[in-house]
Length: 436
Image (cartoon, rainbow, N blue to C red; front, side):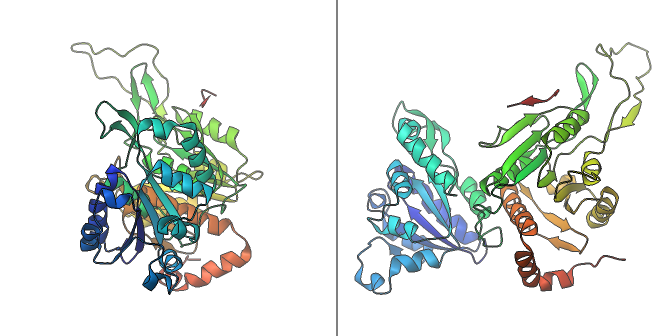
């Protein structure tokens, strides 16, 4: 977020007070914040409070003589890296979906080509009203991103349901994932339009007996975030997920599996694809023979011996396909030491195009956490990204893959822009499937 320019449009709802904390946090992260307030927003918080926190003038009037002498609403939209509307009321959402421009906020939005994030907040019945849902669907089809609303008690007594504005931490994570903040600055809308992306996510569970299994600590958060980012980029997405405590991403074709063998079969059934991203932490081994009944612990009896056999290598299998191989095959390397070295060895042995490597040692908090710090390891070298939210990693990765999948002119342009980075990089030295 450092040195990024955020335009915050505050709508007229009780949740407007949360924007004061959002501004403070964004400034702490080094972002510059400009604010447009609707007339209704000024009924809940004052421009003076907002101005004190942003250290900037607050914009409220479309017909301000000084601003509009320089076509102020155009300038506001052009000078931002990303725009967030919070709270996005039912009225504002309807106006944006309909292309209205009858005040400063809507004029700025209609004149903008920058990434737009909406944080809805309203009464649950207003959110669930078919008119609001039609407007939301239209905006999603236009490439607008949403964060929230959350479910819970509302300001009105006795009202509960979906309609609470997302908390500050969620708003910042969503902003970190926006094009212009996380990625190259190019809008992701349509960058993978017409493409099919297959993604694996989460752990696998390898049964020992009916009540025990071999697993790992993967939460699936990163894989699911990549699926959401790919879907928002216009791709048809098939997500093959091991057992996770996460909802199925909206608009994503999600298949649920448990074991590595089931995941391998599901991947085979999902192909062909343009891109395959193997983010799942597949168990390397399984027991040679699963016991049909629970293994009982008997007093004085020796501990049972488990014979392990190697699970199928899904990444290598797909990367080695002679026919129907995806144009881009991406693997993940979760390491606890020598991260780059192990990732480069994995890249060579698996035959894939790219490895996303990260340090998952206990001190990092990556396993099960919400943030990640990764290295992209290719045959040309390595690129290291700073720590960011897993949503931001996902958006940045999809941006990267879309560029790599693009035409030769785009690829050449991208290569030139990244010349200095490449120069510093290390050179290459020579069903049980349930479909929902």
